Amino acid sequence: MENVLSFKPGRVPLLISMPHAGLQLTPAVKAGLVAEAQSLPDTDWHIPRLYDFATELGASTLAADYSRFVIDLNRPSDDKPLYVGATTGLYPATLFDGVPLFVEGRVPSVAERANYLEQIWTPYHQTLRQELARLKAEFGYALLFDAHSIRSVIPHLFDGKLPDFNLGTFNGASCDPQLAARLEAICARHPAYSHVLNGRFKGGHITRHYGDPAQDIHAVQLELGQCTYMEEFEPFTYRNDLADPTRVVLKELLQGLLAWGREHYGR
Image (cartoon, rainbow, N blue to C red; front, top):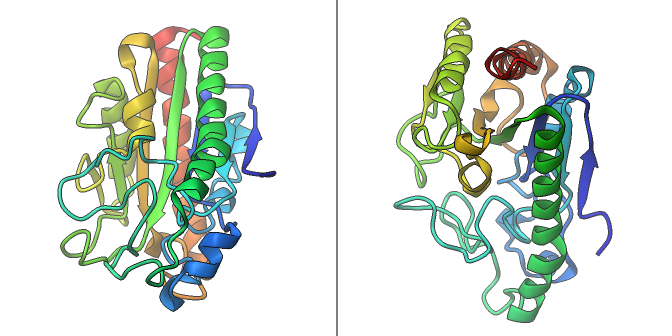
């Protein structure tokens, strides 16, 4: 497979990962999807566009090109569940609302899925791991921001309406608590948006696996309510009137990450 990811190295010790932004499908997945899934409703829509200011900040960016319906890059390769209760796996079987993802008898084969693991999941994680190693070698530390978004009301996954900004640090294990506190404080300065730290979304595999404060790698996940920047239902339109003020907060969060790193490490 070609074009399984989009990667751009930066000049500061920050990598922004976007594992659920992809829209490409393999022939087997495309042929098997139920009608409700063909519009790819569970995509982290427009995330590369929402964060396109990252280049001017000097951050590295890594985005998936293939849909999470093919393989979920934010799940471990052994498919061990990350959350108690309703969730989705390495090879999603249902939509977020619980509807089966594939027509009966049209699920991709074991061999096809092994190929997805080798040719889509593995290159993404190799790139992520190598870039974090490069940043740490150059700066002495690395910052990882795993950027996600989700429909703000999904009864199958969580009760009520999700907060707008859902920060996850695996209950404090993936980054320095002072860094998490700084990001919370930035969110609190924008009362038009609700926020929570380690609520329903505490960080997926990427945050949990790569975040290692003892080794000077600090990882944070942001699960952003899609109502803050787009229409949450098909055709999933990006809305500048919503997105522009949201981008102000996102930029402050990334600048806050970088400022904390400079202060904490002196570079």
